Amino acid sequence: MSGKLRIIFLFIVTICIVLLIVYPLTKKEEALVKFSFGDRIHKFYEPLELNLYFNDGYISDSIVNLVYTADKSVSKTSSPWIRTADVGSLEVSFNILASSDDTISQGQFNIPLKGDWKWNVTCTISPSNPRFGCWGCAGDASFPLNYLYQETVTDSVFFVWGGNGISYTIFY
Image (tube, rainbow, N blue to C red):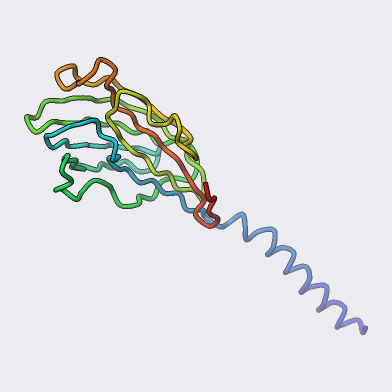
């Protein structure tokens, strides 16, 4: 190989190596979260309104009026997918209101964030934690339910979350 071709070849190889090292470091990984009312709401016959406020350290936002009705007549039981930071944690505050505007529960919890990942967070009202027996669930938080709205003394509000890769899906 002549001297000029050798220099051109080494230059191209060097550029390719640099690009292979630098490109993954510049790629911004997506991270998503979605909130919903679960199907296991424990025998509520009046509409419930779930108000969520979240902060990932960069973005603060709110989702208002996720509504649950026992007869499924209201269709807004889940949020769209929401972009979050790809590191740190998502601080979530919530309150659940009855149709009488009574606060039946409120609280705050954190979800760990990571890149190329989506979390699906489900809110349920139940006498037992729905995470038990949940394949693929990664975390949960429980909160007291206003005693006026309890059917049993163990009724509580549960948030359960599970995740999956965005660019690679894990089948549970």
